[in-house]
Length: 448
Image (cartoon, rainbow, N blue to C red; front, side, top):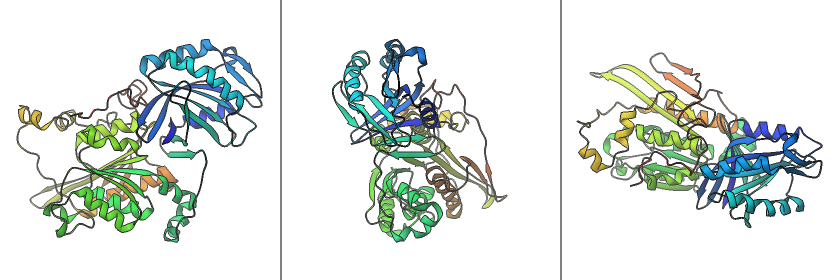
């Protein structure tokens, strides 16, 4: 079981700095968090940070800090009403790598039953910050807790801070990578679990590039099989692959580069909960599908579960064999960044249609005819795939452009950064909406 506490955007840096600034005294805060409970992974998703003033502290010195029950009460009430988690945080300002003390243990054994009594429908947590490291745990019952493996900062960048860092020496195979972003960067890539939704012209190239970079753990999701018209753009696919599932072909591609890779191949759709639930186990997801329904689901996952997504697509307009326009888009979706709803990049009618069951589609009077097959050229898919993977590298190992939304104007040969501001009342990416709610809200996918 891997347990994590995830913070949105820059909130982890801000709260650590504020609490440690109270040195030599201990500092304290209370976090209200959503949660994601998976069979092998529990994550607490910090939504709200409250730091008590001096009048809300019963005790504060260099050895202990006690928060007033009157300060805690409304936050625990909020957790009960919204099915949120409560995390009690404090500092050990004289410890570099702190560990919970006997005083901490005794205090939590008294406090946690009171929290669970008033907010029983979620796990709760505790964290202690040192000047560099941390110690943390998730309380699954009033008397039982499990250790936290890492703290995550999820925003324009993705940073995973493990409690106990064991850094293996990378293979000589990655020498040129290491010269670009160091051994630490190479080990970050090795440790990430990456999802790819859509293994067609863009997704297959993304899978190939990530494999060569050293990513070893994948979840790949696509419902389609390979037909002859795919052979002009699916990397590594040949005529012998016609009739095979795209996820099986992608798995072979990955294993061909990295023999000991771990690949969970899912033949299914992101709009169906039973198919797409394993994406919630990922650290990062690439959206390489042309479905508005899939994009709507992945857009929600990025903010509701603090799992960053890079969404990409390419469009070629042609008439009578003459190309009239070429454009592409690459956008990172993550807390602190505007989402597809904010940017009006989802067609509500297309989302509605994609989320219908087959029976509902047959009975829907507004669906007439079939969508026209769009042109697709591997070189243009390669441009967008490479921009996507380069953005991923910038977000994870600090290499590349700071831009998190780019437009490719193929006829002009231009890649342009797009500046945008999130809607503070957005139903997806704001605190008024899905941000950090995790399992307490349903995702916009089909459950049947």
